[in-house]
Structure formats: C-alpha cells, structure tokens
Image (cartoon, rainbow, N blue to C red; front, side):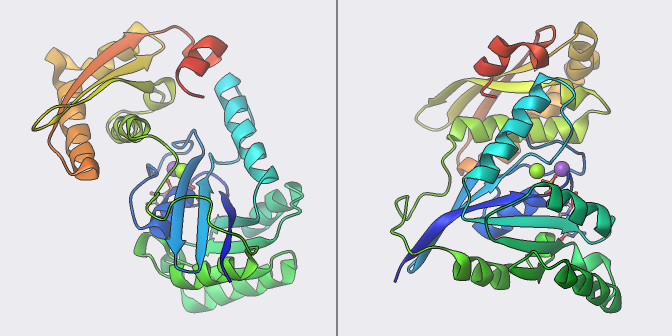
Length: 289
Ligand code: GDP
Ligand code: K
Ligand code: MG
C-alpha cells in the first residue's frame, strides 16, 4: 500500500518551522534567521520513500496583518490550513505554552494535528516531561512529538507519526522532485537570508529581491538580482561606504548560492528604490507575493 499527502507546518514566528522543513527534507530549502517574519512564501519540500510521499509546506509565521504584504502572508497561511491532510503545529518549548495552545485552538483545524515540541535541547528532561504532559492533556493532537530540529533529533519518529496519518494514495510528484519552487526563487531567498544576517532593524523588512537574470554559461552561472527597498536612505545603507556593504552581501550570497547549485556563480547585485512596494498590489504581484 502506498500513502501520500500534504502536510503543513504552522507555528509562531521563530518556533523553528523552516529549520524543521529543512531537517525533514535533508536539504536547505527554507531560509532561516533568528528574526521574525523571515519566511514570506509557502515553501514546499517533498520527501519520497518507496512506500510514501509527503509534500510539506513551510508557512510564514502566524501574525496580525499590519500592511498588505502581511495580509498576503496570512492569506498563504489560511490557504495552507484548508488543503492539508495533516497539520504540524510546532512550538518552541521555551515559549509560553498556554499562549501557543490558545493560538492553535483559534485555528479551528479539522485535519489531524501533530503537536511538535521543538528546541528540546534547551530544556532539562524533567521540564520537557512536564510540557509533554500538558500537551497530551490538551487532547486535540493525534500525537505529541518532541524534537530538536537544529540537531535533527526526533525527525524519524515524527516522519513515522505523519505517515501513520496519511491517506492511501499514489505519489503526486516524480520521485526525484525536491520542491515545487524554481531555482531562481531559491537564489532570491538566499540573498534575502544574507540581508537578514547583515542588516539591522527595519532594512530586511523593507527589502525584496528579484532575480532578473539566470544564465547558465559553460563554466559558471551568471546571476543578476535587484534588491528593492522603499527609501533612498535604505539604498545608501545597503550599498555602504564605497560599496563595502553590498560587496560583502554579494560575497556571502554567492558562496551560499554556489553551495546550493554545486556550481561556480557570477553574481551581480543592483539596488532599486520603489516607494511603498509593500503596499502596492502591482509590485507585490510582480515580486511573486
Ligand atoms: P521559523 O520562523 O518558525 O521558520 O523559525 P526558524 O526555522 O527560522 O528558526 C528560528 C530560530 O530558532 C533560528 O535561530 C533557529 O536556528 C532556531 N532553532 C530552530 N530549531 C531549533 C532547535 O531545535 N534548537 C535550538 N536551540 N534552536 C532552534
Ligand atoms: K525566523
Ligand atoms: Mg520560517
């Protein structure tokens, strides 16, 4: 019997959704940072075994919409809620437990739920057991699984619990498919990850990245990307004194992209100012939101 289905990963910002997705897939697909709202799109990762296939989606964290970009992000969360076979509700064991369970309650899920207690490496055994007991008592999960996504601990157990809940089905994708997103998309995401790593405060949240050129040459791949910001002052910060910051961004991004593609890359970065791109539907559409 072959099983297959769609599994969505939900949780508050920084619970570890993207880290878990990567651990499940065994590749770095989703960008990770200690800052909230790094993930803006649903990212699909596909795990194929001889007797099952799981299509995972990483969703942006659950947030209150503050501007149009946020509304689009929450739209992605809602659409994910409606089309899954299993929902993974993930929480950080160091975070307020009651608040997380309340949030999960408010989702009013009809699909089977697995409660995933992440960052188990940060607590003592007794503390973990107390949390596990409270989660069992919550009563709405088909299973409660404790993991440490960063160390890939508990992932096998989690996969087994998921497979047990999947419907009987033929696979949806060919067996070598890792994701439904394009290489261009991941290249843009990797640059965005480095922007989160290098720049302070509001800069990453005012920035998007568009990969405008992706050309496979004989010995390398030539990539051009536009970094779109909302103000001239932000452009100046990204460029840095005599272009120092953008060169550093370019180097870090290129190394990451080369690792991902397994090929030499020539990367060109440009910075563009587009006033209020986050509130403009035309821009949002153009930028793939
Ligand atoms: P997301 O916002 O839910 O997608 O969270 P991320 O996957 O981006 O992770 C947020 C932060 O938590 C990052 O700094 C991760 O390295 C960290 N993190 C994720 N999983 C674990 C874990 O198992 N243990 C510890 N100690 N940190 C983790
Ligand atoms: K994050
Ligand atoms: Mg994320």
